[in-house]
Length: 77
Image 1: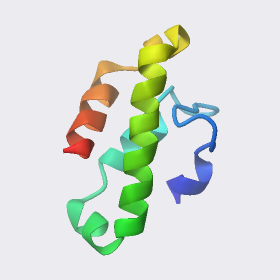
Image 2: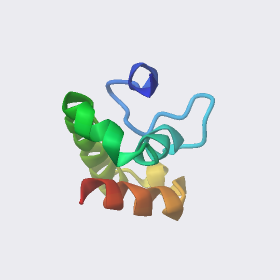
Image 3: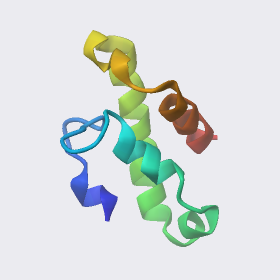
């Protein structure tokens, strides 16, 4: 699962992916899945909040696509 691919210290990790792409992929998962996997949902809510914190405080994270940021915001609603 994607959860294992995220680095605990960097929710915007991008190794083989575009920066922020792993979290973006999470936001595309069907809501029915999240209803049945509440613990994972809470984990990714935390990770996306951490990503927003990094975006606000790290000028290197500015390269992230606006599409990803929009998806993160929708996921948190």
